[in-house]
Image 1 (cartoon, one colour):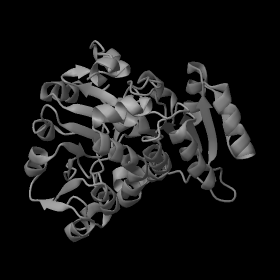
Image 2: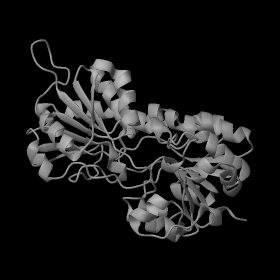
Image 3: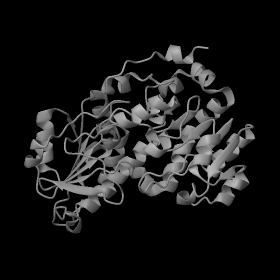
Amino acid sequence: MLIGVPKEIKNHEYRVGLTPESVSELVAHGHSVQVETGAGTGIGADDEAYRTAGATIGATAAEIFEAAEMIVKVKEPQPAECAMLRSGQILYTYLHLAPDPEQTKALIASGVTAIAYETVTSPTGTLPLLKPMSQVAGRMSIQAGATALEKAHGGRGVLLGGVPGVQPGKVVVLGGGVVGFNAAQMAVGLGADVTILDRSPDVLERLATHFESRAKTAYSTQTRISEMIAEADLVIGAVLIPGAAAPKLVTRADLALMKPGAVLVDVAIDQGGCFETSHATTHAEPTYEVDGIVHYCVANMPGAVARTSTYALNNVTLPHALRIADLGWQAALRRDVHLANGLNVWNGKITCDAVAEALGYETTPLSEALAG
């Protein structure tokens, strides 16, 4: 199979779909890989590193998209990239379609077979291709929030860890999954006063056992959220419903409860955000203010630490890429129901229930896509 790796074009996105080491693995399996020139610059991998790994170098994205049987990316295709996709081609990347009707329409119109990292599952029901980026984003959320809390960035002027004689900052984490756990770990490490809210008794028990007295846990209700955000200096939105739009846990009216200069970091922004006042921002302009509350809503947070993120992502995406390339996408998905859950768009149809429900489409059964 000929696999194409275009350079990411989203604002301040420095990750790349395949590392040189991943290219070597694919080439060793008998596949061809074409990488757009400069695609790996953000992770410190120049064109020569890819040539040494066995790839050829393409001069333009158009050249990559035209030739490749499978496109491997990191972020969802931008409009110019969607226009280059074609029927019968495989797209393997993050998609986050539920809050993005325009991208969904473009993928449907292209006829591409789109496999989304974020809906591939594991035997335990987790999302293994989303997990490493959730770990990165969770940890980064505290860094970003701490910076936004500085007075020069519009925040309250609070140091999360405090100092002797001065109370630490209060951090509230909404959601105790992978993002929330990693955010809490970082906040606890800085010495902040941390509370994690979740609706799962099992999750709350696991968090309480892990953090002991270093972080508090609370069952999440709307009343409790309102109470917690009123005292918070930093609120981390870390909720996830696989494949679906994130629930809105904090409304605009709720902002009036918060301290002026408090910070909201919405890690769920890829799925539409869990704060009513959230809209996607970029690393170039990461924050904005609504009713005196600073919002940080960068939609590709892990892109800022591109080398760490790319290698962590390739650790989990490469095995599936190899299977797709070795067997063809239909045979690979028939053999692995968890990989099959990653199929979101096929032959102009939606095959993911959560995406179809969010955007008002009918779901085409996986069995129809995998037949033949």
